[in-house]
Length: 454
Image (cartoon, rainbow, N blue to C red; front, side):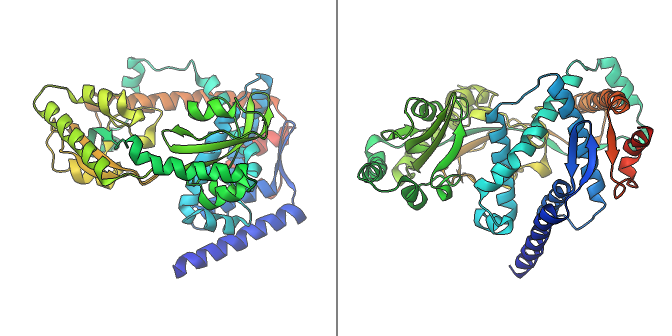
């Protein structure tokens, strides 16, 4: 705890220093075409780097500046090509960033103390930067969208490795899961409906919606902001929520309605075309012992059907699993650290410890008995069944076993060459200037040389 307070104190001082620099000694550190990069923006990137637990290293600013130059160059081309991103995509990216920052700092309150502002204010400040990053990513995808590798190119890429430099591939597994959450009866849910209905009636009688949301809402993302969720579009939320958000007029409040997350009341604050600024109160019905008993019986029945060969695991996952991400993938979990490859081969060291404990003693082809669990995100209780589809022992990388990995690496290598050629052409035709303070960075050599040709 003491160590955390020391680190948090140092980070707070750093943040204050960054803010002071932004208001007193800010300057332009680079120019790319008509776009400028400010010292304050660079310092803010460095503050985030430290906030993520990295040791101080001012040289890393050179790397950040290089990334910012690349992003500005991509953004400039995106404007020419009319490439845009939806507000919902920006919202999703902001939410992910905030969840990560909150987790790193040990809670929203500590993050806000560090930032010296609310999460909502910080999200508003970060929005332009996040949007620009998404546009740059989209531009990069467009540049490389027609770049593919053939089996012959994969083979040549593999053969480019020295035999001694072939990567060591650790143990990998393919794991399937069936997730089962208990369903409450109407009678079990009634008390939660009555609770949120009482809040709705209090608001109708004149009490403040925001105050009641702060006091009672069980949505961790919006409760502290009085239930305010900002602007949403028709693709942002689940269908029941969206239906009320775009049915109501500004100032109107919905009746109690139910989604997969629980019971809501929603109020529209403002409408702007196909966007609605909303706030809500959420009450989550809690699992009862009886509902857990019911889902345990169902889990046991599914397990028996699978082990008796009456139902394949993949079919059982499609029919019964409550995990929408794996339900229609035969229940197979994807490697979360490599989402672009969408591979089902997961290094054992990257498995959730609660999953590893179960599958470690299983044989390939075996299905576990129902395992009780509690969701890390919202605390929901339920049962899981696991299926160990395959287990690959440690080995030196080879094409026979690891073709998808080498194909992905070959693709990345080819994409990098395409992007390098693209940047070289754009650097030759774009005005670029680097401030003397950063001109000596190794990362700036190409950019500085271009600068001197101007």
